[in-house]
Amino acid sequence: MVTDRLADGVRIAELLASEVTGNESDLRGLAVVDADRDVEPTADGALAYRIAREGSGTDEGATEALAEVHVQPDRALIEAVVAPDAAADAAIEVDLRARPKAVHPPRTLVFVEDGAQVKRALAVLEAVGNASDDE
Image (cartoon, rainbow, N blue to C red; front, side, top):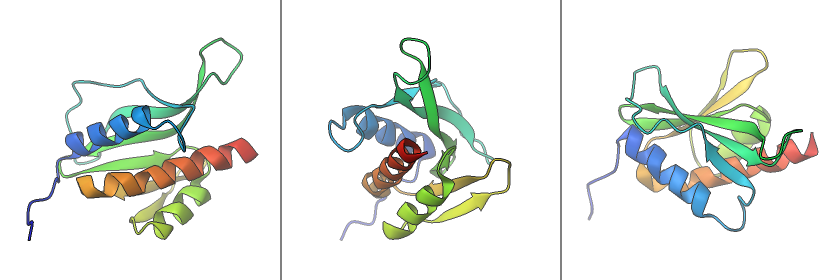
């Protein structure tokens, strides 16, 4: 039985970014933007990068932020900037912990606490992307 688990927030965020950029189907059109390659994890969660829709907006190449990814020492956090209800529902469906963030407009935090949860977290990003299409 394997007892090792990947519980390094920066590495989990890197795996998630790799999955987003390498996904040619469900997440097509989403991109990792504003990446801080030297991000240091903090207890509150340091911003590592944003997940955005490519080519939205009025300027060529402009992006619309859908989520932010923050890193803590032992996990990564996906903060759904749009469609917080869709993010929460998708997180529950794939057995990831989520909670609302008390800001205006509302946001949802989804906790990715292990490298093995990265694939499940893609469903959250897909749900946020799809819900933002409907808005």
